[in-house]
Amino acid sequence: MYLEELLRLVVQVTAEIMNSKISSLMLLDPDKKELVVKATQSISEAYNKKPNVPLGQGISGVVAQENKPVCVLDVKTDLRYLNRELAKKEGLCSLACVPLAVKGRVIGVLNCYTSKKHKFSKHEVDLLTALANQAAIAIENAELNLRARSAEDALTTRKLVERAKDILSQEANIFPSEAYRLIQKQSMDMRKSMREVAEAIILAKDIRAKK
Image 1 (cartoon, rainbow, N blue to C red):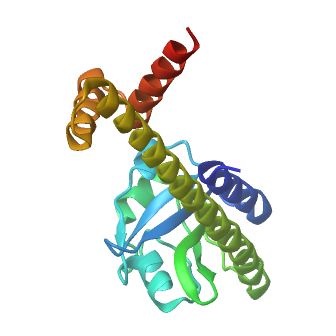
Image 2 (image 1 turned 180 degrees about the vertical axis):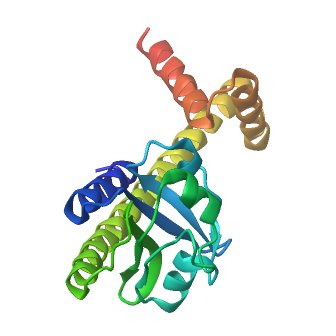
């Protein structure tokens, strides 16, 4: 399952189980130290485009930093909530925010909003936390698989470019470095990836060899 599909599934399941108005999932950008909305079942453009939340700021930022759930009775009046005007516009009220963590390392947060004031029970928070824990493991595995595929693709591309470079170098009697620059130039001129250009060079070589 692709990561984007997994994230959408997590928020959909969370919204259904928790009977929430909006469920959203934010992942932590470790370089910028910000939480970014990655999935929500809300169709509101304003909510989907809400600003990133710095680590340690706002409700979700504190949850991510301290790795502890936080519940808010009314986000429209709680000064810790950074998007109170948006909450008023969207009709959001109570919030339960729990960390997404794998082996103690926080990778994001899972938010659950209601449209009316609601005091989340311990059972509800425990249920949301259990969902978040399972989601965090699935997300971590999906990201690992994605990185593995990316590394494999990069290695394959490098091998193809090396082979294409050797073909050009031999056929045009030029240095390998010059052949590499030609592949780069053709890639930019044709707006194709270097892998696509390399594959075309190799295919042309194979076709000529069969004649």
